[in-house]
Image 1 (cartoon, rainbow, N blue to C red):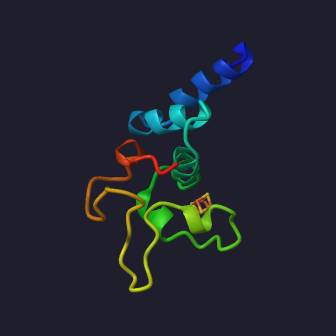
Image 2: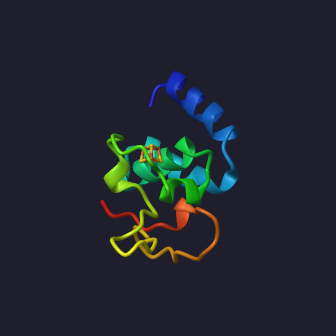
Image 3: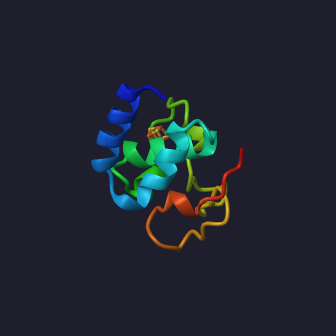
Length: 98
Ligand code: SF4
């Protein structure tokens, strides 16, 4: 990674809640598309899991892949082993699916 990119990433990391940093690091390292989507959705909603679940941006390219989307019965589904009634959006607890 270039020095310039590393610097930008370090600056960006400082602006996000610590609990989301591991997933972001995994995403920017190119290690997981799942981490990239989770991290992007978390940031898009200012790190509010409920807002990701309720996302109304139907045209967003990540909409079908966002974490915590409700299933057909309206229940929130986890993209992995994160329980729907678990702690606030914690992407580092989400198992990579790539
Ligand atoms: S799916 Fe929704 S929460 Fe995720 S990036 Fe798109 S607009 Fe944001």
